[in-house]
Image (cartoon, helix red, strand yellow):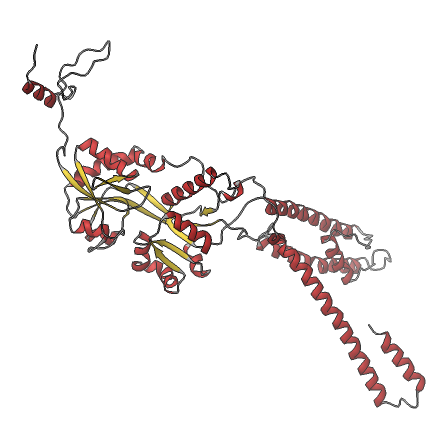
Length: 490
């Protein structure tokens, strides 16, 4: 039976289970034939909207095909889901300047002037923009982190001071200073209480007690022979304390010198200002807006005016070169930083000339210094908000947005700050404190040596001056004895 073209058109238009050529979709074996499944028209079918976006790969990027901009990236995958659900078509528009902008330029300018129906991207929500654009349902939260060159030296210290923090060192120093006098005082109390006993009233000099404390710290023996239980308990307590302390110190020193564990010099925004670090951020980003318009970031504005900061518009590859060459601290969204680090790691891994220890050149801070909600932008009083927001909310609540944002990233952390059990060779910088101790010791000994010579000469001059002013001629034997005594003075 011949079917007329008009009937084919009607069937394919009304029935969703018929192809454009009028043929029916095959029904799986064992299932009943549903007949004609009525097509439900999509809400925005046949409509074309203009979508504005910024270049922020890999989240949003555009390619021109046959003179038409084609949107790509994770954000446009979300747009494609909306398109499939609502049936609209869209055109991609980019602002002249790749910045957030204001009411006159940038992506905000396009939306505010209603030159586009929707702006998509990793766009931050600011309450100050409520008079210019209408924010969509929040898609996610964008944490901001620091990207910097992996340090060669840990901020917690290296060499001999690394195993303990400052508090422990202060307590150790206090115990060394106070333990000698404490032992001496307890011995004096015992002597007073045991008066009359020649054996129990033996006193160790204060200098001997102090030297015992120092000698035990250096793992040296002692000539002191305590004869009472109280003295023996004091000496044993100090020896046990020093044994445990040196054991912990030796174990931690080995770990600090051989494992690639670091802490960073810069962990928050205040560190940038106080340590006068050179930093950079993306031009036209949310960070630039905060620096210029938020009083809480005035210290960054001052750092910027002093020449320590800059806003740049360069590629990620060029930015990594700047970070490595100029030791810059790069402020960017964690999502973007992770993609940048992952691409850099893959490139170095595929290059056989790059050794494994050189693949993780960069590191980012674990704790974000800023959290900003991201969304799409509508023109004020846009009717699209009532259509798109319920769908965007559903995508967020079902975890689809989170999955899309993470789908191209590995499950494990990329180039973590602590490289785990990977050992490293000792560098000359690790022995810096050792060199300083040796040099300081030699310098102190030299100063003491010349001080002894100077003291001896001064005493000799004083003795000779006293003899010259006295009746030296009447007592020649006394003169010889005094001069001989002056020569024997240290």
